[in-house]
Image (cartoon, rainbow over all chains, first blue to last red):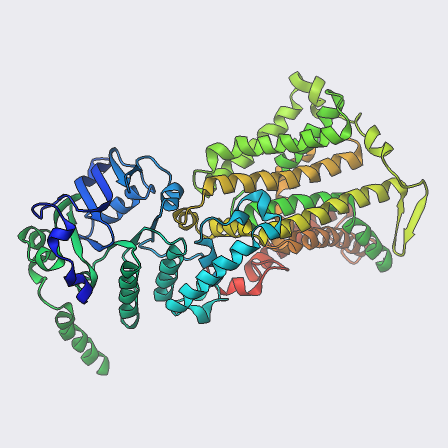
Length: 297
Length: 327
């Protein structure tokens, strides 16, 4: 928790903290990115910069355009207009696989574990620069077996870190939802990305796993990876992020460090609503005790 | 009813050039469907394109056999590009529709009178086998192998055909155990996930379509070389669905599956024909006549394939573990 508080604001952004403010060292810059589905404007981001080496949270109510924005940035969807660049390289119109090769790897809200591949094969697939992945070299084993061993070593280390090593030879289909999230994240790390974009990493994860997932994300930061994640879990946002960007109705309505952004009136209005300070746990308790009473009858 | 004779016949059929063709086509389809998840319902067209490509190269272009075979393979690769480039960016179902339509278009095109000087029209072509048969190194005579006996020319086709199957299967085995094969399997499971890991999914799918097509076209070539005859009406959707049956029988994501599946499928057809024919002869099936049997046995085979797909979706040689998950 301490690491998120240690970064001071003036080391992250230049000038006043405001939606679309400039960053000291941006890794990703988006400009005028607009995506319309018929009459609906899903994303309309005037300007946003993602700070390098930090954990940035992208939050917003359902339908705010967070995932669409993710899809646009990674090339999985094409915007109607706009430009965005990663480490100074223009990404507009680039195919998703090229974006990934530049070191910008994403995960998905609905986990995409490759079900009928084993866990270790899932991991190996995440690696880059395997000559055996091209058709002709794949036929000659000595040309790729060394790289394969390196890849497997990295994969095994990551699996151990994510506590999936016992599942190494199992089909990914046999993993629980939370384990699949972990696998997807570990797989994304196989290529040592510069920027990892996690789409709701906590969705559907067992609370017992939450803490370890949080630690993994903090580890990424200490290893120099930039993290951008979409999340609804405010606890997580407050806990690990250095910077928070708030989207509503496709626009960036606020940004800043988590402590101040949560108090921003625009955010409270657009997103958190009247219950933002109420622990949802205590709210739902009466309901659950009621149902339990009903059961005992 | 001579059971031994029925079995002998079945064994002969299992190793026949027709089986070889089905096996090669099914191996190609395994690359498409079993490993990459491409729904290709036009495998007959890939076989036909290869066969016609070779035959026309010999017949019209007067190329030597070796070059003609290469031409046939090239034709099927080009055919794969024509089919794949517009459709492989789209959802899987579009490829299915386009392949089934293109296969029919190709067949009708070959039947068209306007081009019959080159294609032979609906009569097909038959003046192209000389060089193939001249290359037969086996001396004239009959060769006995226990149950089955072969003439020299039959043995020649047998060796060429099964040689192609074995070499093809070994290459496929190398491919599918390599990182390249892993990417294909990844695409089968979820192509967006593979894309997000930095793989050019479209290009891999195109490669898979081409390689599967090349297997089918080799199958097609062996089929027409054996008959010394190529005719458009062979390459119907029926042909394609037989290959699908062979593939699903053996196991879609396996290499042994299509080979054994082809042999078992052909043997089943031969044995049911023999047994039911025998039963009708003995008067045990009074409600059937000999001509009905051809239909009834296909019906029975269709039924057993349905049962197989329901109760053993991974096929006879598929991995049991795979079916524990409903995905």
